[in-house]
Every structure is written in structure tokens, then in C-alpha cells.
Length: 463
Image (cartoon, rainbow, N blue to C red; front, side):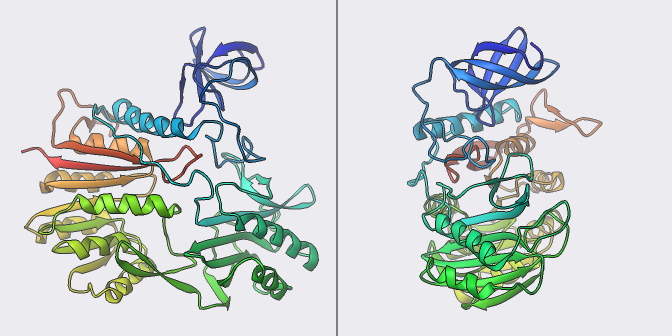
């Protein structure tokens, strides 16, 4: 099997990215959008050693699980990778994805609960984030292709609400009418870089990112937005830097009050243009409710990677005391404001700094029943944090992760099934040195139609 060969094969399983896995002639071939049991003609695109990648040119026997994708750019856009799979099978795929990651990466054999479904299979995202560019002499608005910054132009995105289609059309009309260009990352030319919209209970925060501080025709764009959104605030963000970071430092509010009050789990909070809020409102509520149910009223909770403090406040409402640790100063300031708004200043303490620096300090002064909550970014938890937890003897750890691979690695270190060797590489601990037992693993489908899954885990200390 070599590059450009055309073979006929049958997929045996799904890989971690939802691609079909074909094994033939000692080679494992990964084929996007091919389902287990499907026999297909496949063109080999590349091969390195015993691993190859291919493209299905014809499917002879479609699987029962196959669905007709509803997106016109499915397969080219880098967002959704599972629209070709019926939703109930997507849930099974994500349950298996978490189970396999724990076993293969972390050396952990445990029960994984069924994936908590999203009530909305489409139209669930409350945030739209679109790059605006210029390709082949034309302005384009869309999403990036997988593993690239090449924009795939689109006029509609089914996982966003109906207003997204109207917004994309408005951006195109704005550029055409006012003679504006999308930003070219290679040359640095062009005015418009991104359009970002956050929906909060039918109120909207719209941010247009511009490479120029003064943008001609912006009043016309506001006129177009008036016909789309019933109530909205509008920011013009200035980002002149040659960077992949979306927002620049300078936000100018041109319409509305710039923030809106929301409530979640009995906690009132304000959200602005740069506030992090989970994109699936229904699944977020289920996840937070289940997470808070895992702690008791007489416990102190240390919420690491706490962001703006919403979950920290939920813990503070229920428990004896709650700490929130967050590295971003603006997020900690939001958490302080949230504590005051909800009358939680006596029970909620927000600390700004790294988790590896601050967690040991808090653990040293809290001697009662303590639960540590870890909700890290996709890269996972720092080794120093895991070492501090192992030494502390904390009785209970709750983890919320959006990456099964780094979750499995971190759980392996916490439970003792993995350990670093003399070169710092992680290897299976033989014999295992058990420290924590896995009591709950529950996936939540925060992101239907995509390969991503949010997972809630409960660990308890082994005496």
C-alpha cells in the first residue's frame, strides 16, 4: 500500500477523530467519514511506516448508522466531523472514545456512563466566531479548514441558530457596500478580521474585529444589525497585530451597554464580549448541576482554573466555603464582582495566579474536608499540580475535561497507573501504586456533530 494506490477495504472501527479505521496488509489506514462495516474504494493519500491516510472515493455498502449531512460545506470545514453519523451513534462513539482513552493512555479500566445527550442536535451554539479574509481576490466569510487558516466560505452553519445565516449575509453586504476588504494574513492588508457574536437569553453581544482603528461605514453595519437582533450591544475591536489571537486589547463600545445580566443555577452574573460561557446552554446546566451535586455542605471547595467564577459561586452557595483560582486578572475581577452581586463575599475567595503556585498554599491552610475541582484547558493539568494533590491527601477530586487524551494522562498520574521514568516520560506503573479510585466517569455532549466531548470525573482517596 503506497501513496496514490486505490484499494478496496472495510472499516473496522472509528478512530479518535471519528475517522474509519481500515487494516490491510499490515497497515492501519485512517479514512475520514467512513463508518465501521462500510466497504469502500479508497485512494491512499499518504503513508508513513505502518500508518496511512486515505480518502473514500466510493462507498459500496453504507452503514445503518450513516446520516445525510445537512451542512453544505461538511467535509471541508474543520468544525463538524460527525454529521454523517446518526445522533444516537455519536453519543455511543463519545462514550467509547472516553473509555478507550482511559484504558489505552491512562491504563485505567473503569465503567464509563452513557453520554449525556444534548436536547438540540443542531442550532445549539450560543457563540459564533467567524474569520473574515480575502482569498483569490475575493472577500470570504466562513470557518477554517481543519489544521489550517484557510477559510472555507459559507453562508450558513447548522450548529448555530438561525440568526447566524442573516449575520453572514450582513457582513458580505457591509463589505460590498462600503468597499471594505477581509484581512489577508500573509500580506497584512484588509480591514475586517473577525465577527464574534454571543447570545445571552435573546440578547446579543456583537464584536467586529478590525485591523484599522477607524472603520468607514460602521453606522451602515449597525443599520444591518438592527434588522437581525432585537436587542444587542456592539463593540469595535482594534487588532493591528500579525497574530492568530482574535481580539486586540482595544474595545470601543458603539451601541448598547456592553454587558448583560444572566442567571445560572441560582447565580446572577454579568457577561461581556470577552466573558467565557459554555456554548451549549442546555448541556452546561446539566453539567454544572451534576458537578455541584458531588460536593457536600460541610466541605471547602477549591475550584482550579475557575475563569469568571460562575461554578465557584455555585459551590459557595452550597458549601461551607469556596476558593476560585484563576490566572487571568480580568476573570478574577469578574469573579469578585460576581461574589458581591450574589452576597457571597464571606464564603467565596478569588485568587489570581497559577494553580501550581496557589493550590499548595490553600491546601496548607484548609484542614477540614476539602474537595479540589480541576477544569483545565485542553492541554490538561500541570505535573506540579498533580504532585501537590498526591502529597496533600485530599479526599476528593472532581475533574471536568474537554480532552479525553489529556484527561486519561492526568487520571493515570492521580490514580497511580502512570508514573514518569528517569527521562520524565510517562510509563505504566508496574506494579500500580493506587492513590485515588475512579468513582464516576460521565461524558456530556456539549458539542454535537463534532468530535469533542466534555467529561465529568469523580476521584476518591484510597485509605
